Length: 369
Image (cartoon, rainbow, N blue to C red; front, top):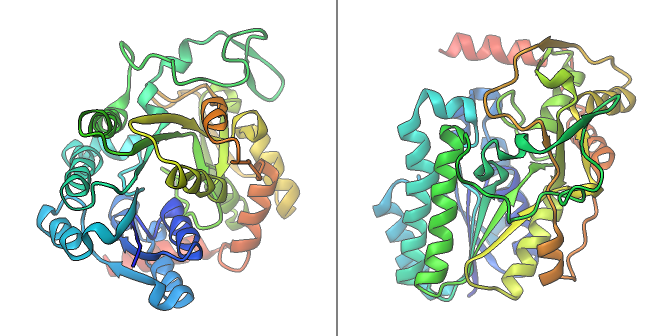
């Protein structure tokens, strides 16, 4: 028996990884306790995804309702499967800057300590299993905001000829800049994954993701950019747009392309690898460009409220470079661009995200509370 252990298995990347690795013939064990509902409310719950995975995959998927902060539960799990674990894919996290400020203890315990708990269990019970960690471009803090930018009609862009014109590389410093509480906890996890790779010669990788997206996202205001744009447009909900004239740029990578990178690393793992992984020049958009795409797809005009002040530490321009990963794994190919991603999000949710569904869900939540 070969087991893929996936944390955050009901989330966007986790659920895509579950399907993908089950499709490769591995038995998948998913660990998820729906903390997304605790973080962001009922609309962000991933319980629907657990049911879908269980129904679709049957015996190929085993779900474990456990918290990665619970060391005893994790140890029991790793003892149960031991060296049958062929790969660990760690996608569980507290993913929001804003939420981290409200409860920094939980943020750090989930993101940093939870990652350490997993690494130590892999070291003790499945030392040959590659450890694939979903890190984030937020480990660079607000350093990208020091780049020279020019204002165009619908976006900010980096100055032509700059070393990062084709995307920000892994040599960008993470020091002497503002990270946010969330960014700091993700830095701690990122560095620890690298350290276990170097110090204990484990096969580890940190994928520093840009905007990770796809139709399985339980999109909410504090997390899930393209999904939330599409959701607001379809439900006729007001989108709160913060700063930079709405021209801030994000690269966006579909969950399918992310887990294809996971598979490439799984088949040829390295120790202490670090890669930026995002949409790159192939797939990126500004806020107002995304609004126009949403309007074209749905036929609905975007409703938004512009607020002059940007979120603290928010990137004004982020396009990451996939050059390093593509050099090491030339078989990996990126498929999706932003219009394809948003069209798929629309088609996957056209029956759920309808006008009035948001207010009905809020009323139901308030009644239950």
